[in-house]
Length: 192
Image (tube, rainbow, N blue to C red; front, side, top):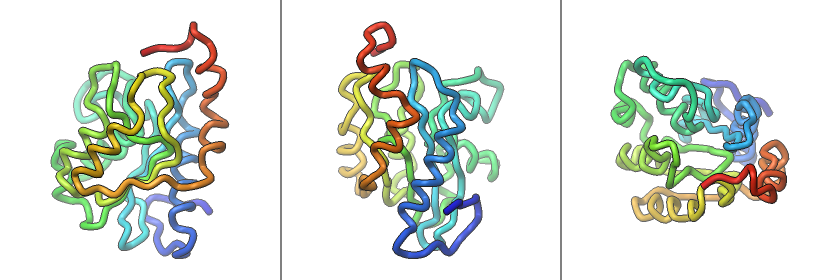
């Protein structure tokens, strides 16, 4: 099922899968590179089953709210930047306009550590102070580029009262266009 921004009323029993499918379709737009994963995300009003914003890795310049360099934006970050642009707000204030039951679907768990020096996706979510109620994830982040990134961010999110759930059956689909095995086993392509 294809879900467009603003589309609503998905079947109740399939809404998690449909939104994760949409996040996967966003991830496929991410330009492949040997030093990053192709991740997709969508921010959703869970009460209305409506997509508020979508994003994928490297979709926007690092600082899309001002003149910035290209690259290094993560999928979740792109979702937040688009909401900020739409409402003329700084990214850290998008909680002022998000619906009360906002959830995030992302093909890979939000990062807890970044080599670029950019703010992590976990920190971006936490600074919204509870505006995101749940995060639905397709796969854990492997230690391919940043070691010890797996699970720590999820613990921080859960400690802040944000529900974190993995959507079963998505792992192979996310791996299929991220070349995990090729990069993981090649020491010349590993970073971090």
